[in-house]
Length: 626
Image 1 (spheres, helix red, strand yellow):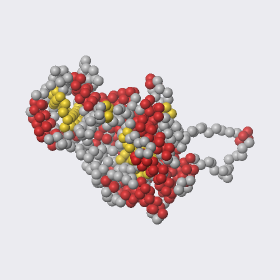
Image 2: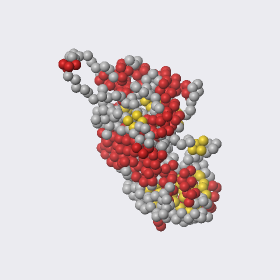
Image 3: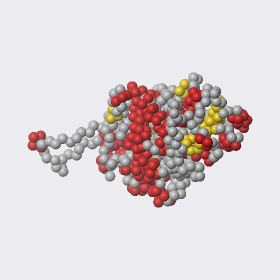
Image 4: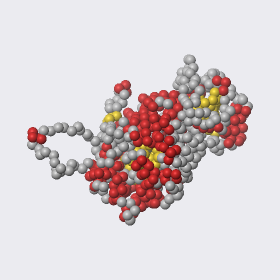
């Protein structure tokens, strides 16, 4: 296969072309248009051969000039090509020149010629500054990715100045994807993609690792859970496609994950290898439905799952390392020809089971284009170069992946301009127009599963004695902050308490004593579903004791929706789907009837509730929602 033929393999776009990426604000914003550079494309002009005094075209005429991607690939050495497959992790922290954190990543970029980086947490302005700096240190333009599953605020928001307890702001964060499933509006999913793309590209991020296309059909799933749109494959497909369109029509590279489907597992792949024993018929009927739809819609990236599907691969190895999954299934059967990203290669589902050099070679042999977060970049490059030198891999196979990556960079306009305009960051990222859309989605997602004696909406009597108990990670200082703040506006005498994994029995005894003296107890659960899906026994017992003592109480889940199985006798059980600020404020407003409760669950849990369940509560007359 020649370099030209490799580079001309089309990306998975039904029109056969990329979008010219021009990003517009709404007219009411008063802002000037923001243009994301893209390759200049001109319509062909018909020229009369005689008037132009040009020879007629013939098969012996000179070949057209090489594109940037073609000429760049032709000039690369093998080690540089292999470096392009690497995407190491970078923190978005402030790292001045000469600091250890700055010089470490710069040395990797300059010496190993990595093809890109995955940017983690940081403030929008600092991320943009840092990425501009890293781009200038790179011989070739860097492709920048970030996990932006629920908007740019998924990674670039949430910083708090600890001495003053001041929230420093950041990019727009939306509720979880399952909240979009509860709202049931494709337009909202499109807006999520549009705003994510605008904010990401403004900061210098090209590839939001989104959407999650996993169908969460297992209540015990500790790693996907509310990251999924829901359990109905068709609904997940429709919402996923809308998200993809919003992203790619506004300049970003959508990346569906986690192929071939991480929804039916009870093991966290960060910790061990999940094994899903399903056959191809089941895979076609459930897990592959959203991926097929996204591929048909022209999605440009797919991320692999570190899960074993032995009925498909024929062996108990991660799908990331399986040629049967990545090449036979994804490339050949589903017809995907975009970029295949591995999931993070430092996760234990791969890292503990295979030697690091061997794992990256197997991933490339399987069909992966990008090695995400190798623990040792040089070691990974050395292993792949050795595999080519020994004949285990061919250089043509490396060229195939590098060709895809360079062509993508060219179509993103990175060959012409790789830096971003820093002055645009505060004009685009986290602006009120974007936050307002996130707020609207959060309000429409609130779902009520249980409401004994029509407890909700609450009366909101200002002199009422109310106890608010929040279960959260002790490091998560923002969970409960906005919810309790809204409660206190109505209940000036509000008493707040926080519990976590380490809270002792004496503390719970004190809570029960206070609960007995209260008119209302509100229990908020900000559950960390990554790694576990249950709650400490003491927390569960506290809620169940409230029911036994007939203390008026409401339980709100700001995370895992399946918790009702732990306390089925809760008087009221509400799903807010995420701990995002907009979700906390929406849930508090819903308690008092300030917003109509209209969400319907996109997942079920027999016998407690089914897909589509949700008690509808109209807006309470005379009550403001915010």
